[in-house]
Image (cartoon, rainbow, N blue to C red; front, side):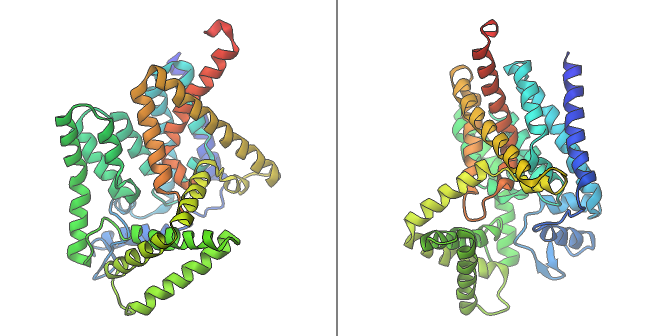
Length: 391
């Protein structure tokens, strides 16, 4: 029976991923793939982790550029491999969720296998797919193997800096103090080492300057755009331009990434502290976008269906999955509290930390496996409630 289930999962995930690849327009680079491919090519040409020869890169962390370099920075093989990772992850979700029952395991795997943003971003030279796989491994190891899970948590940070404080969530959920201490130390080793590297070569003790840029351009600018009470997207562009100009007026043209990052952070916090209410509204708006954005336009690109039909169908799909996931966490809280807390903590962390002016379905991708498992538990609860024979 499990072989039959796995055959279904592999078939659905493979068809969904590779049909999308086949039908896509070949744009593997939007929006910022070049910022990963650049360091990868520098590594391959012997110039180290740099923007250009002699200019170290502080913006990006090393794991994904190294991943690209392993493929010779040839993008199509990377894209094919990322789609294969999605197929493998669907299988891993099934295996992990089996302890909740066969129906839950199969439903969770299928929900992930057909998730549009997960498929869409596997079709890009971006960190989402690799990060999602690594996060699921860390998630599955939670509470065990403190050294290994700690080091992998550090690798997460060096894949996408958004994971910078995720170790706190895992540490809180761990039981024994000694194992927790070992885990925390192991989780901090790699990020701290990279921050030291950035301090030495670029003058800023940070894992990545992307945090400073996002803080200014999306959180501070976003708070001001919310306060303007007009068209958010248009106001955001205006506020970003004004804040960038303010930084430029204070800095020489040849200022390094590290120096600019310090100025970005200082100005961003000044603006945020001046607009606390607007910043709170921005965070709420960003959270709602992260949760409910269906990325329907990504499917529209490869479908012949009318765009409005696609939008409605995918918006409904996301809303139903989200509602079932909430129900699933409630059900798990009664029978497997540790898993319920782990899912809720993981999903909440990644959705909240990326809730700002830049929010989109892309930032939900890393926690789609956890959402799928919770939604499958919720669906199973609805199924049992509707059928007395299953109670």
